[in-house]
Length: 276
Image (cartoon, rainbow, N blue to C red; front, side, top):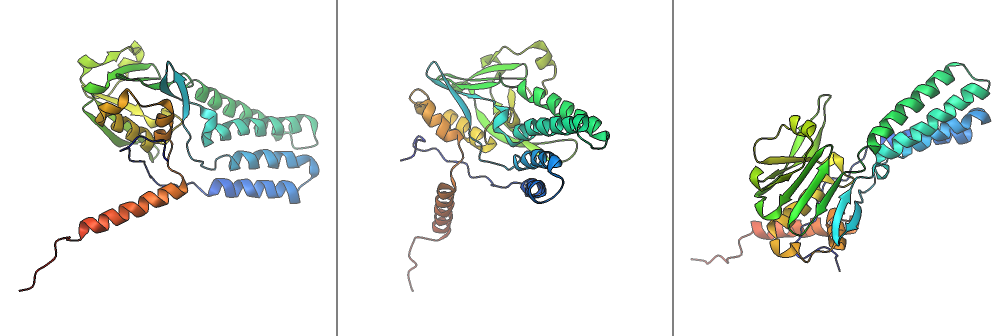
């Protein structure tokens, strides 16, 4: 029996990942096993593990329970980018150590130092976001990230939409846009955060990259709680976790098959035609 409340529609989405990362990782690991001097194999292992860590795994929400309510947090070490960045620090430290102690070209020292410091700086940036949280309270949705702090009453949220935000170097990421009158929102944001706010009046944007969660599942969960006020008081943190967790492969296949069947039945005319 599903932990999700009745009526919740799970998010399917596309389950894709770039093959180049795990393939590159396997190549480095193969080089560590079958080729190169023994002293250099640790470098290949470090790069191999870093590349393999980019394998996209199902997003499992970092949930906590505070005062009996579900709280979604951000944990960068659960994401492929966080794992990759940390293991690059290990790879950089390994290269630096070889450059200082082994009979290798001297550029190993500079390369290892640059890689270690660069990855360390990026990892530190990722860790600055661990205070972000979304609290699914009974009466409000409390969102806090990057200087923004909003408490939006469920009853005042009139629409939940998603949009793709284009980035300068190509590509995009998903944003969740909530429509809610400003007069109903408790806004504790810092002045610097308000200064960079670009939303139209009455719209509040939540960037999905700020959380360790599948974007579509987060949007669907918020939309469900907005549309089903009878569920807010009784919903449990366990149910919220289940709603934020994308369906497993077998469940995804069953849901997709049921949707195809429903679409087929809807496309046919159930009324029998009479002759004559």
